Length: 439
Image 1 (cartoon, rainbow, N blue to C red):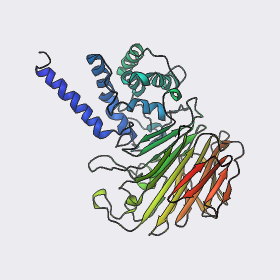
Image 2: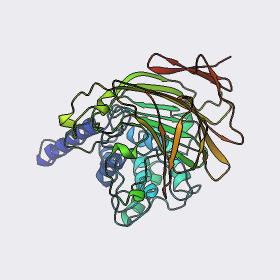
Image 3: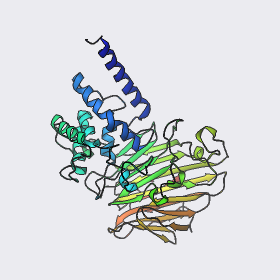
Image 4: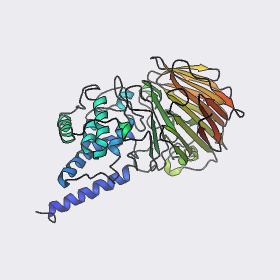
């Protein structure tokens, strides 16, 4: 019928509708407002396929300059090869049943009838500049250097693999050559950090602020929660819903946050400051007071007068003498003291000044609290994840080092509001943390 006929109008409506959806559902660097599970679902069932078909029909790239441009390369930023399943810093809803009963961790990058074939589909629809990184990720996760499943779960997945490899002839290129080591989706408040792209020992950390929760969509009580993975271990993760018999759905109880009973949890956080550097160093400081409002739902949140800020620091540069150096600074005003909580898949052990996590593979994470100086650490064991709870006052400053071998010394300074680790100095400055070379 030609470009002005009925099919032409339908095609135009489909194009405008798809990119309108992407514009509303995805942020400025590919993160989805409804979390990682719903970042994947629409793209694996139709989104990536549509982008590939559209680019072939129009004879040109169709994603550059749109909200879809960064969805595919976000996979390369986040995924780390793993023994049983690739790791991803997961935020969102972890289902109890997705066609088969699998562990909570496997579901964080499930390969079922609902979500599968991502990497081949992403490779086939990515902008040309990002295809070498996607091909590297494909090879190391599901290809010749990965589990050799070739990302095939459903029969149709095999067709997409063949098409992607045939129509994307670019050779693999290490993602570090084209992707940043600090990732910022400012619209939806997702920030990620990575030290390298090499193997299962890669270190990845992330924090989610959830600044724009919406009624009528999946949203989560995770403002200010963080994830840490490296040297093959999930050091800070979403608590396992399997350990809770899948009875806890969306809850701040599952997150790595300061928990204050009787507060809402649904409202999001507000970015105060971001310091993101090319060497894998980053500091995110946010006002999380909204999450500590009253009420039970997003629409009935009421101000209780509680003011909470959190500053999350990641240093993957190696300047601290360890593969990963992290710090968290929390300040609570106007409310009763909260409980600092972190969930881990490692084996936790309480110490006089913090805790030690044992990855069972020679790697450890050592947490040292400067404030409170004598933390009351309580361990709640689980099957997949264990909860670490620190009862404290209105200020928490903790530094965590990730290493193989002995942990480096943490030297407190300035009345325990600053510290040195290796060649790094970290200090409290106003509501947040600052980091410099230290010498």
